[in-house]
Length: 81
Image 1 (cartoon, rainbow, N blue to C red):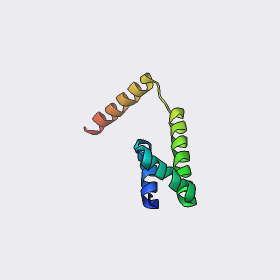
Image 2 (image 1 turned 45 degrees about the vertical axis):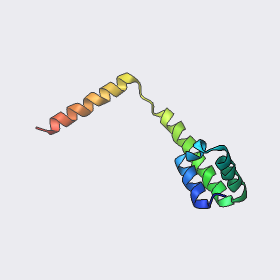
Image 3 (image 1 turned 120 degrees about the vertical axis):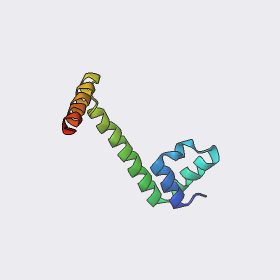
Image 4 (image 1 turned 30 degrees about the horizontal axis):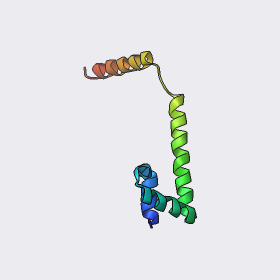
């Protein structure tokens, strides 16, 4: 059976999705029995969802990215003088 430390590491790095069948079952069984890991896993999933949703909010069009890149390059070349 997996230990709490192993479960939290797997949950934090998203490695649990690549586990074999038996390890996935151990992972899920541990979550069913351990309320602390269950809460941690839930929080990690929630943070991931929120990050994905907020990143969609700030997507820029290619033209905007090009303008931003030129402004940055102009700023960098102006500071070298």
